[in-house]
Image (tube, rainbow, N blue to C red; front, top):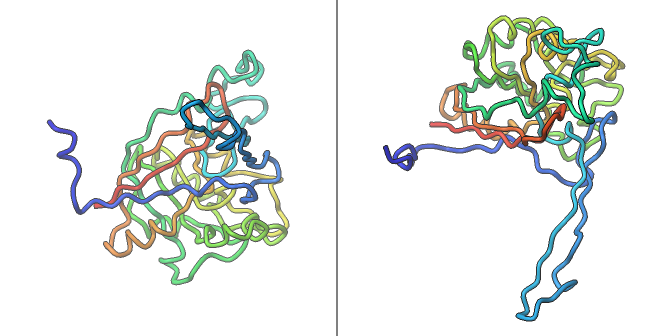
Amino acid sequence: MNPLDLLRDDLEVVDLAQPLEVGMPASPTHPAFEFALRQRHGDVVRADGMTGSHEVMVLGGHVGTHMDALSHVAVDGLLHGGVPVNGAVEAGRYRTHGIDRVPPLLRRGVLVDVPRSRGVARLAPGEPVRVADLLAAPEPRPGDVVLVRTGWAQLWGDPQAYLGGTDGVPGVDADAARWLAARGVGAVGADTIALEHIPAGGGLSALPVHRILLAEAGINLIEVMALEALSESLAARATGEFLFVGAPLNVRGATGAPIRPLAVIR
């Protein structure tokens, strides 16, 4: 079979990653993204007139559009599956449950488009996404990648608003997380900084959805996604399903890493 036969004129590919840029929203608990040119054109000139330019980038594993590894969260000193934290780290990195253990994902994707189903532009600060919202989308199957749109990506250009501050951030609540876990989904993503419901005044002091999905169910999370274009494309086709394609950077023993997910729509 010729692989090019899989390409069709009616396929659309939608980028689900936010751009990495200095000053973009980043959780206050993680290092911000930094970028600087290390060498500019003209700094070094070869005899034939050719020049090169390159940069230095510094970022935390949980900055920008990224995936959480199972080593990101522990409960009472235990990672998912009862693995003791004390024995999981070797030479400064996780020898188990790291992001390098996540295979490339080529899965059925399901969009839970909460603002569209509720008839609003975006959810209010601190608004929970409940089981009823999940029921309004196509039924997820085991292994699916479920993406939850809150409309919060509309605030990407305003880091203070995007992070929520004292007003909170919309997101998946604990009951919705248990519902997804019970269906054996492969990964859950969202367009907010932490994926889960952050109530007004709550901050990041409690993250029950991270506990349910990562520590208990062993389901990876994808945060800080760009889901606005996907919402428009799927709505135009009257569907909530697509092909999800994505793989986190293969950083050995990391608790998370950038990912550039794609949606392929027919």
